[in-house]
Length: 78
Image (tube, rainbow, N blue to C red; front, side, top):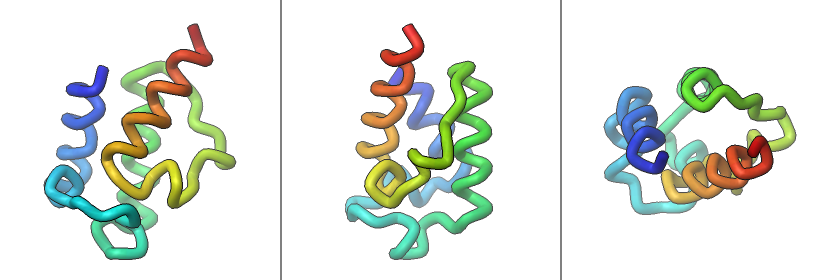
């Protein structure tokens, strides 16, 4: 699962995988359009719905936080 998530992140922006900070949106690594594309790709790939309440800097601030969010959402679905 983590490998597939990282592939999706790389497809949206190669800068995501190299980013080592905690605030990709604030630091300009991704913008709102990238975020929407990312959410759509994750939802379609893993057949889940990511509610608006999860679209926070905490959940989408780094590749690690995105992987963590996806693990939680997928586990909830099971």
